[in-house]
Image (cartoon, rainbow, N blue to C red):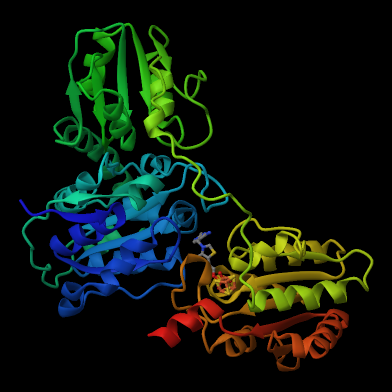
Length: 529
Ligand SMILES: Cc1ncc(C[n+]2csc(CCOP(=O)(O)OP(=O)(O)O)c2C)c(N)n1
Ligand code: SF4
């Protein structure tokens, strides 16, 4: 049988296309980005006219995906874990309205924070929304679950959360593809107004329906081919292995399991199989990549008559991603040196590229801020966050996308002067614009520097929604035209840039300085093309 060597992300993308996808709505974020990029590059997607343009942020992505589902089509929405925080309002309410065409939301979580500011486990969001969750244990399952996920979504009338983690997203395996299905025809839901108008009377009804559906979701989990019980003779311990943790467990038992194992890859937790495990074993070890999501539920649900080991009792470290060695240690096995990755290159701190425009922004800004007694620079998320590191040491905060402008405003309201925000162009349209409107409405006293490299550089150079529009957006929001200044961040312009920074810091009100020079990496890619 022909196999394709796919990343987990690519397996999801190909499965969605094979299952008859009509659109993907996403915002870039590691480790989810490659799903949408794969669809953008796919000839099948091009032939079919599958929608794949990036969205402004994850919330607009989930809402647009719901619109496509409303029109009867199969649709995917992909994001990194923190993206689901941004989309949470839409995501939780899609569980109230339900869907029409099959809808899958992919959350790519990043335990160990390889490229994120936290390591939240988004299975909690699926549980919170009370919808089915898939968590593949290998890349073939990532393919199959995506393919089958549309059918499950349409059969139940609810979206599916597909939760993967970094290793699943970014490692490769041989994948067997399935039959290529056609797209759904256009249609709209017959009961659309009762379901999609979430006025309290409808919402109460819909919440009841969602509660009633829980039994159906449980039955699907208990009969799912992705949840499996493996019996074995040594019943002193039973093991629950969730998602990719099952893969790590298998690596530790090349000859087959010696303890009973419950593999969980579809939620809600399959109760029958869990009872079988608990009733036949003396103790339970829970293996999961992320938070103690299952462990906590098992503890609460079963009471305390059986000992549960996992992240909560310290058998597994509470923080960081799981790997085969940690699983081996938890099982009391010897750690196999084979799995340990030798250092290939010396580790070194990340840095802004030589020649990057963000460098010039920080050099000029740092020089100007020496003239003030207690300046603060509230920054944001993007390549320019590296301005936190030497030699710049130029920023005082980086919390979440958009928080630069709003934090600078709050601090300015409290008397901070000068209060400066530094934000990138993509982050500005993701969630900086609304904060800017707050500043204008409140006549806040701050300087906002939009470091515009005309791309979303940090996640690999995706197009930025803001390109060619930043001045007009700022003006439309209400920043006065004289205080929207544009500079080219280059060494030869330092004196001009510094003077403009000084003038705008000393102006009492909202000012925006747009420092515009294309990212040299995307520029080089364009030239190469
Ligand atoms: C809510 C959320 N979504 C996505 C990301 C991933 N991400 C980090 S920075 C960034 C955008 C960076 O673009 P820009 O602001 O233009 O700065 P640049 O990297 O180009 O300098 C993205 C998408 C994230 N950290 N948080
Ligand atoms: S990728 Fe682009 S924006 Fe990021 S550091 Fe390099 S030059 Fe600067």
